[in-house]
Structures are given as structure tokens and as C-alpha cells.
Amino acid sequence: MKAPNDPRPVRVLPRGECPVCNMTYHLTSSGKVGRHNGITLSGFSTGQRCPGIGRAPYVAPGA
Ligand SMILES: [Zn+2]
Image (cartoon, rainbow, N blue to C red; front, side, top):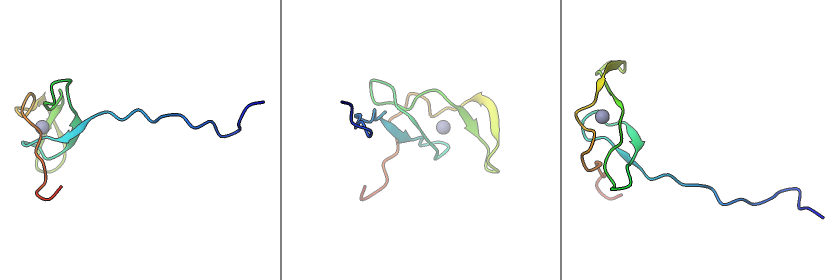
């Protein structure tokens, strides 16, 4: 007999906020911001890698 609602552990990927573009991205195994493209102020991708890659993620005060 199988339970209809099989509780599975949810895989939680570490995420953090890029200090440059203020968007949330996955973190690398070393806890740094992962690869992503930069975002312009109007919210469009710049098409180039964000300079925040590899930096420590921004942590909101009080978080
Ligand atoms: Zn960024």
C-alpha cells in the first residue's frame, strides 16, 4: 500500500541576493553568488555577466 501524498524532502538550494543587481540567485558551494547576467535599472538583462558573481551575497539587515 502506498500513501497518496508521499512526503518528499524538498531540496533547498542555497540562495542569496546579489550585492550588485539586488536579485536573488543560487549560491555556489562556497556560498558566493552564482553566475548570472547583470540587470539594468529598468529590469532588463544586460547580456553580460554581472560583476557581483563570486561575491558574498547581500544579507538584509535583520534577516
Ligand atoms: Zn548580480
